[in-house]
Image (cartoon, rainbow, N blue to C red; front, side):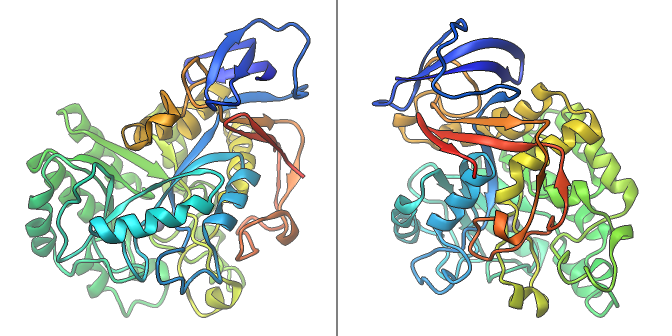
Length: 413
Ligand SMILES: [Zn+2]
């Protein structure tokens, strides 16, 4: 039994107590009172249900051709470094998991990961649903990889076979991207109107085919109103936001940092950024999901889109608390409870009630943050194989004290 005493934070309650994790089952067995006999010193810390990042690109697949930049072992080291205890991995690999056999082949590779990996299956122009219950991802327009559509009509003809399924959408309208492809900057090539148009179409598909929908890395304030209106009429749709769309905006771009901060969708205006922070705090946006994209420094110099984030997930959460007045319970909601709810139905039974809450029967994985011990990001502080961070040189107000995976302690270095 592992016993941890201290300040416990769930999304709906905060209290002093003791957590007992059964080391054989890996599940939380009991919540009790503080008795002054903790196996971990949590002085000055907050104990959260383990954080979940439900949008990452770990880059490992059956081809093995992208393991030079990340694999499941290095991605899980980065996750633990950032206080993340489970992840969900996207399907845009060279050998994409799009049917039963390619999905099983990729799933066998996740055995090398210390944190649990939920795999999305890809939806492309010629795919059909898998036999097993899995989450799906649809790239509406071209991004990184070959799984994309060139028109909305083509996408709808495929989605019509996925009625009732759990589908996440990358919302950028391919026709608007095509019309702007010769614009001078990355932001102008991929304008807000592309996301807003694709949002309308995704909501139409979610409604018509009764999908359980999720919109990935949401970035525009213009689309939010349409989503809230759709929710009000009963659509099942949730929203992700990335740390980079909350921390950076297009007014911060310079000739020096522009290549490092290139991603899809691109950085938006300061007004969009502040609207996203407010929506996340209010509960209109559901998850902090990073879109962790571990491209090498050389690839970034050549214009690759995407930035790595797993290592900095927990420290970033302390920035929201200090700089934007998020309560500890707000952090538990967007970093732990909601991500736990998303993956719950896809977990093996050995995870009990799953992730996202500190209560008996839930997985014994925890994120212990010290919100008042600052941490500075450097190339030496990250475990991702690509070995850089968009936050290099930045000091966050807090840090990850330790990460607990099913009763096993990983102190931060
Ligand atoms: Zn992504």
